[in-house]
Amino acid sequence: MYQVFQNLKEWQKIAKNITCWFYLLTSPPYALYEKPQADMQALVRGGVTAITYCGGYCTQFADLQKYLVMRWSIDPNRDAEKMVKEFVDFKFGPAANLMMEFIKDVEKNRRDLRGVQVSSEYSSIPVESKRLVRWQKLFDRMEKITAKNKKYFNEVRMVRSAVDAWSLLFYS
Image (cartoon, rainbow, N blue to C red):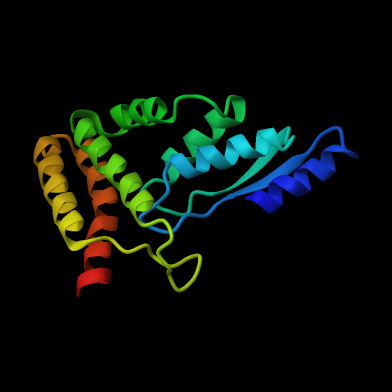
């Protein structure tokens, strides 16, 4: 991001308005809110006055990421965790607290693995088996909590599909 920031500073010298095409490409398990918010804040510091958003490629959290980027386009300093919680409360209902626990741990996994080499920018970031087991148990609990509400149950299942895939990818 440093080179992008330096380039934006140069553009500020000759342009009144700077629009940036913001790609939110994150390798699963995702950078859901910490890194994207830091990127948005850097763009504003670099003089960006408008963004065109492209991303949301992670099926399980595309709607959350779009929501956050749109809110940060108004104020990039909004409390990310608070916005995630509001969104998760709405989308996952009675399973919201467990989903927040999962999301926070996904962010922690990404932080724990900073500097770990993957084969390309788009490769999956490794997840320890004990973490995947913990996540599977969280989703078992979320499914049980939402079993009688098809809407919430289906939302939980959509996110769980990523955890199931990671389990197969890393440990099959």
